[in-house]
Image 1 (cartoon, rainbow, N blue to C red):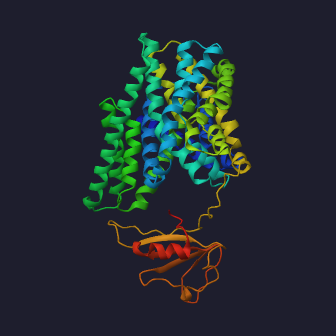
Image 2 (image 1 turned 180 degrees about the vertical axis):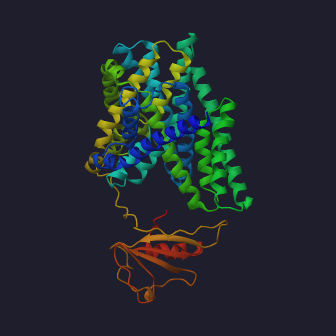
Image 3 (image 1 turned 90 degrees about the vertical axis):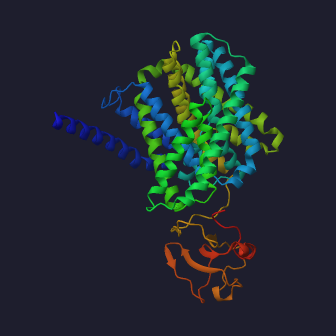
Length: 493
């Protein structure tokens, strides 16, 4: 018996390892084609499913929903952990409007269009609610693969909107599913009150948990550096669970908890962030593999007409109209409004939410899942592939310096008064072509390392700074003005 169990577990791990390896290795192909990685992972899951190679027979929507929820918790927490508070302040207004009013407008327009196309009203409402949220990770994955840096305000707006708009999409989906099953009418006012209450309680609890964790973490003085990411993972789980158990938005809470924690003092920050980045990627791959297993291509053919029509409605009417109305008061240029409206890609959240009506027992709910899956795939193929071209066509590519070939970090349990910062030497700076000995650096500032293409250069007095160098230096915050005058804006800002 024990040998059979061991063999079964070994085979399961071998299959999982093979699928994971295939997904990771094939990511290079996705980068070359310009398609979102999520689409590739979904394809691998479909290939291994019942109507592919038939390696895994899987149709457990409940398990998929649980795994998807866990993955979203890890991904949202990682997103908050890596978002500077200064960036949030810059675009909180427009991103907040897009995440609330924009979601409602998109859902309403899609539901109306779906109903006019012939979908039953409950199904049309569910489709509109499920695909109303966006996924900035898909956009930035495509841009990174193409080597494009998006302009700061546009990128921050897309990123913060995606972090804030999931809770409302979830609330809308569950409310419509409840109406479709029980026949109970939810008034618009009740829905608005419910959204505000869930967002306020969830946001308050999430921010509070993040702040408490930020205060406690530097004081714990854990013996092993590896225990700090274990602590932050525990914070992520609690930040989602506590508000959810109280009927509030756990997804908004976990994002804000990561935001508060990431903008505080985090011992061994680089290692902690690296662990969360790896965990978020693993969660994303596993989630899309599982969701791919739920897809039956033969069933998708019947949903193709509705899926194509709803995808076109979303891309050409619903999303652009909602974005234009929401951003009009914030004086975004027309090209930025058009860009944000076009590249609002859909990711895993809609597919996970599409399992909720099935679990709730909504009649004909499988059609919702199939239509939503079709919309996500078409959205990724058509809009995702056009992101690099459109970014260049609208001149929304920033002239930020290229990343260095090597990165220097200092790992420490406690915060220091001095900081290690990196700067890029471009032709506009007066220090280009100047020897280090001739730079008027304060006594508390010292150049630690110069990264020049594939060379690591130990700085000496006669070392000359060249255009294209990445310069790492230690400086006291009081000398920030002098350093910025010489080297410009730090790469880490």
